[in-house]
Image (cartoon, rainbow over the protein chains, first blue to last red):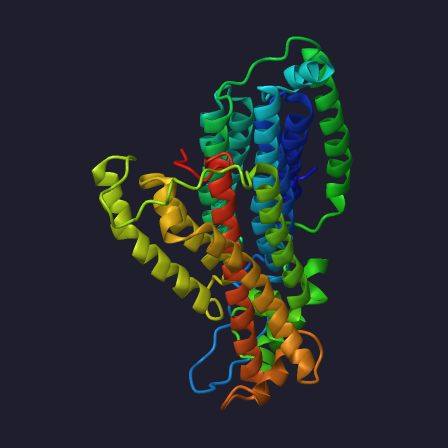
Length: 129
Length: 341
């Protein structure tokens, strides 16, 4: 594979690696807090994937349209602005993500209160007892 | 986009991700995870996603780290290694991650190159919004106009999800009726209750009004600059959480009673849905704000869409602020709403 081709897509490999790290933590780690961190890493990997699809190289700027006062007309070209659609979807996903993170932490805290542990293994032992 | 900068940020993100899942001390893991969020925030700024970066800076690096710290301080801080089947779980985890990662890596050959202006996502639908946002809605920030107008229905339910998540935290951790009524919330202006050092308290006391003013600016100026209801709401919530951390939880509850907080949370969703219903009543489609020019004085249908967006952003701000505060109160005090951390 040519060097230029690697450079064009290495970002996706890093997102996939982040996603793998998150998935691994969710399965292999025994601690509930670690599983939740893994879940959040998984989530950011997907968010960053979406956002990078909207990125444009070569002079495109942030998606706030330059406009003059008193109705000065500008010709707006889509190529000059990065794609705003992934931003919208992911912005709400981040805030919903923190709200669901709160729910996950609340469930983990109730489990701790009831079984006195955050470790999957000990919780399962105490459920069986 | 500057490739050296991209490379450093992506490398830092990987390092922070690995560190936060491998650290044995959960407090450190939570802090490193906050750093990871901040690195992500830099990456998004680099790619021109300023609204997303702003949200991540307020949410990921700010509020969610505080949630983690509060939860860890109420549970156990140390991670214990598994006693049985350690290699079995590691094997299963690694196998699942490698299998899915392998499939995605194979598929990545078909992805558009990073930053390609002609990628499929950027040439079909999105030019329409970029070109028409000013003629249609007079809102230069395309993210705001798509969020609150073109895709307003979607955002309404996102706001509802946040509201429901707040209710869920209250249902899981809240202790209804079991609280003793004698401990009245302390007054904020009274002699500082036991908490942090006076220096921190004085500093926070000066910062809080400016944070709240900034949050209102972010909310109101979201049409023209990065920001809007989500970011404004999170910053407002952060200002209340700051009071709760530097004084104690009761000082914050004295400022923002829990009952009022719940009213704000539901009021936000109601403002959003109510704006939509008002459009229905005036004979247009749900959330078609252009019809609001009939009841707003001296507005054209185009400016009415801009004002309609501001109305729903205010609704979003109320709900997000109240739910973030609600989650913090319940996690930090384990549902008791007493002293907190």
